[in-house]
Length: 231
Ligand SMILES: [Ca+2]
Ligand SMILES: [Ca+2]
Image (cartoon, rainbow, N blue to C red; front, side, top):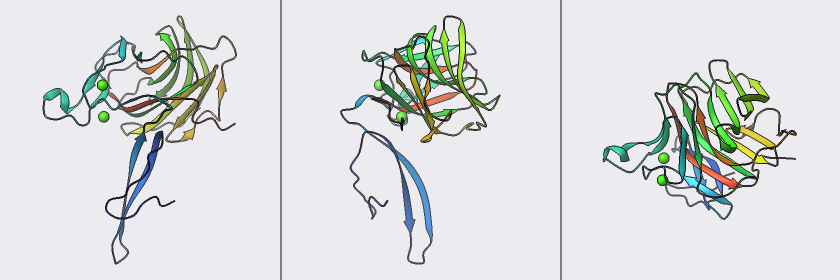
């Protein structure tokens, strides 16, 4: 679907993240292509944070070493701020605490990880001992959906062939009454919704990391409802 033409195109933003293709063509028919991700904010948006202001307002670093990184920190600009984790082999967790939502929401973010160790998205969290997490682990080429309660980790679902190392991708995780839907670049993972029928958790959204190497997270949105559920 073509939504605009010309050097300047005006497109009506919708809530959530959308990917647009930029196509340049000349008279001889030569073309070049690029894509951009645009995030619209609407009444269904609980949070949108691009970290370009260089602070973690609303976020709580529960464990480890998450911080706001980017040029804003060196005084040379305000662009390209992001949430970053690095240089800490201990479990790390950051949760968004800005509102009181607990259930029925979707967390979406642009993730870029250089870590071989588990890292990823968290929902339904009341702390590091009670949460669901969408795990990316390059070392074992696996994505997993895990439930952590106390010191027990239960694998709710897993899928092999994950190779998104050192490249940005859009990950999302929805939570609604113990049903989770995970997606990468718009594709639903684990074959569809996964339901935790034993003691569903509710709570905050955030990110975790259990390695040494860098993980960047940017353009985070939390929206009401389960955007990727197609029941
Ligand atoms: Ca940013
Ligand atoms: Ca901020």
